[in-house]
Image (tube, rainbow, N blue to C red; front, side, top):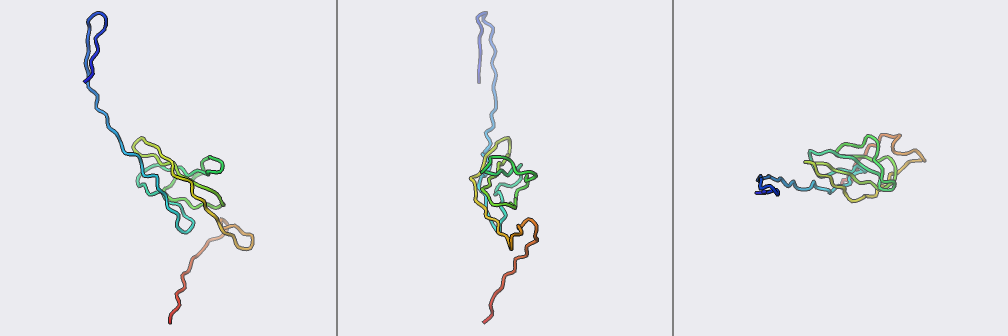
Length: 113
């Protein structure tokens, strides 16, 4: 409880309830050239760490970069913001054609004895 008395003897008192929210989980994973924020149900903005600028339209929980670089995500949840560490992503190309122009299909081949 807080109280205040001014020089004229007038006083007031009040109480305040404070809620402390936990910081969002700032961990991200990289799998098959897709970065994913571990924090569910939040707002996301992926950034290019090399330029420290937002990546256009990269506001989903997962992000698939189309260019080599270091990327991080700013996660907002319950009014709190955190930024993940930067992760280096190397996008491969085939005969000079960037991955962004191709639809890749990964096939696992298992040898049978």
